[in-house]
Length: 171
Image: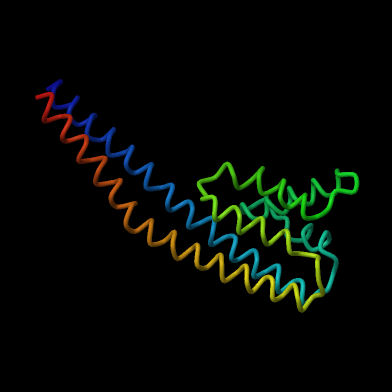
């Protein structure tokens, strides 16, 4: 009875490790989807309200989403900083919020590039910047979804297979 319980615990433990590893791929796709929605909303708000970027970023800050938390952090750094540019605030907030998540280096660079270009031109130029950033985010999301489909299943299968293999070797 003890061997059966130990075997089941071993299989389930390894399987759960595989599932946890696969969840990181899902988290990446969720974060990128959230970024796309936030960038689209920011583009629409910018063209509709025609307000300054700090005001727009403050409006976008909503603690219920990760992008809202990001905009809140940008606004917080901008208000606290003495003459710090919006670009530097954006970069610092990106480092604070997104580097702790499971995003790749390319994902983080795409977010930073968007912040570097904002405020350098008029509204029509910024709309083009958003279009470019959105196309890059969508390409990254497509890549992340493909990776999730392939590697996610692989890690789940690998976890359970490793558990079964350990049990077989020990019995």
